[in-house]
Image 1 (spheres, rainbow, N blue to C red):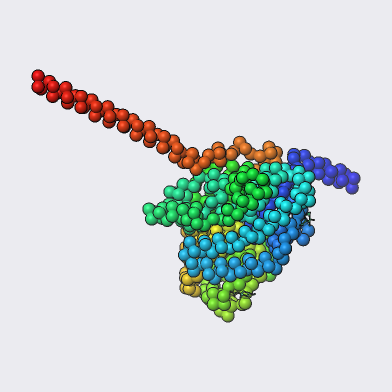
Image 2 (cartoon, rainbow, N blue to C red):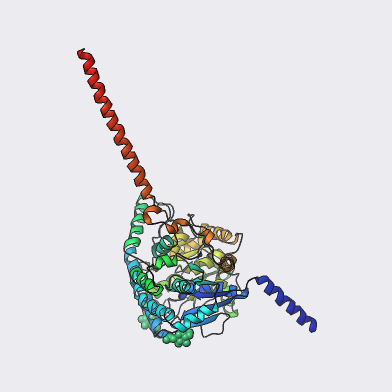
Length: 529
Ligand SMILES: *[C@@H]1O[C@H](CO)[C@@H](O)[C@H](O)[C@H]1NC(C)=O
Ligand SMILES: *[C@@H]1O[C@H](CO)[C@@H](O)[C@H](O)[C@H]1NC(C)=O
């Protein structure tokens, strides 16, 4: 017994020694799938002995601060109740699922922006209640955090970091039109071969597609922005007591953790403080619950298809649900469909509805043949991790872009949620299941994903710890942050050189004209003589 205790103490000491520097991490999260992804990193940080505190809004409904957890929560109270917050999101989803897919890209992006601008009011309230609460700020100040981890989709995190003078790490998939990475993070995005986020283009563009890419770049630059910049610039200046902008404050991030990797991305230039950590939440599959395993095994040789539209979409219109169900009824595979709405009349005997599915474990099951997905980044990565080909029915946000990437890599077929018929969905499913190229491509992506020098989760944690150890990562910061737009594009230098050239040409022509005249004069003189 005593020996066991001694051993345990020894192990504990080893763990502490292993941690080296056990730091304090403050987190500014965002809702939905963003939080599910971030939580994996935070839990890993606590596993390694760090103390993690999440600064959350009382209205966030996925950030479950009431449940027992290894994370600490500091709740900022806002006069919105969760019920209202859920309704706002549901209202958005209603539009996203039933209206957005019918709209052309720029209109659906404007819908998205309308929602984001509506959210500004709520984020601003949250921000005010955080930064103007003196006792809260004092408490945070006294806690002496070593690093902040921030999801920039919800503004204000970087403002808190600036007030507390704590270095911070940004984590995101992308911002609308990549505006944040490009202007705040200085990530180079040459429009000739890097498709604009949300444009659904690939890296190999025809002339007309390049025209579209540039038009989209301009569109996102001038008309459609991820935040109400004017409001936030003013708010940040007011709080900090000096003129500043949201972008400038965000740009102070030491490290940017991007939730993709080269299995997903098209090759592109990036900066030394950008780390691509896509798929960090993926894990090997665990055994399924008994009842589900029995159902999966009953599929025999044909295998199963997994179908989920993500955690947010609960129900479809009855018409759409029937259309989908009748397509699913015609395949020989068994189908596990995550769906909470009314049971469709056309549901086949091969299809079973579930309120919730262990998606990662199902995708890792040897009987799984295909995944029908809305194309959320988390789900796509689970499919890549396990090498499962996909049928994509994207709806909004990053989903069309994610499916476009998978389509370009030959691992997915896209079906339009709005215009699809039963036959369209059926033929897409048959293609993905029966044409071996989809499986091969999915397996290729999976091999690329698994063959990395350091796993994405370890890399994410490494860089957060790096920032803690060194109080930042300024050695990775490009000097582009200090240049203005004219200097960045060397327009001043080009202007100067053009002026030099013009002057040179001017003098050379002048000289020429002068000597020519003189020459012709002397010539004439000579003739006369
Ligand atoms: C300010 O923060 C403290 C500590 O987190 C909290 O107890 C208090 O309710 C907050 N005050 C307001 C006005 O929100
Ligand atoms: C989804 O379900 C909610 C209530 O459960 C209902 O109010 C809403 O109309 C449904 N939406 C669709 C598209 O059927």
